Image 1 (cartoon, helix red, strand yellow):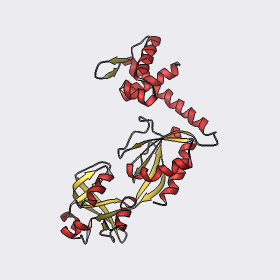
Image 2 (spheres, one colour):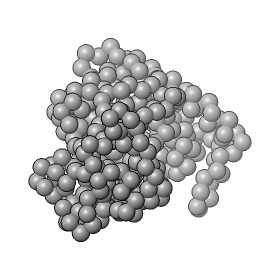
Image 3 (cartoon, helix red, strand yellow):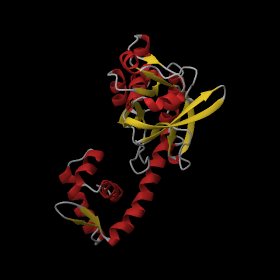
Image 4 (tube, helix red, strand yellow):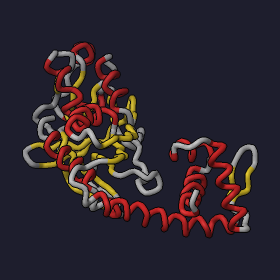
Length: 292
């Protein structure tokens, strides 16, 4: 293994703080990763990592070497992206992160349209550090995308406030947003909090209602299942509840009071900007979101 490859192994071991996780990410065996680390330390004549049975700790030399390796690995990734930009057919591995419910609508068609692109998907509502996690692109619902990343608005998603017919039959139907304080409120939030702030638009005037969350989760599927089970009212993306509304399993409420549409952004590190697989994925998303 070359010195550059050994530096990449060290970078992943230090980043993951684990030989096992680094081995999985690199597609190598744990034993081979450990062997390469020993060879690297011997060739450098310096101890980079203190190993114990429970954890790894970088030495002073290890921290300094890690900083240099991080810059070199980023430059290596940039060089690969430049080469990819000359390829006629987008190909290679594409690492994506997005909320689970959205990816279920997006990826099957993309894989069909671009069979030479292999997708590694982190389907999670958590906001991941793209550079640290080595993710190519994230799809995020937000009014304020991260200024440290390149962000391209690719669409908007409408949210609908609804409840099951059984819940409304038992508890009544709110007439105005202020009535919601008398109902169980279910919240889909990337950062779950007990105190809710639901925003409504009525005749171009925005109104914010402060509420308490009966169930708050960053997993939209959990909120959807609670909604169907009659546990309260919830705002969820239109593409999640549309089918249940059509089947009368859910009933929209306060329809004249709309929640502002939330922008959808594709965000990615600047070093990925020339990658054709990023470009075609963003173009595909923008088109498919029009149909949701």
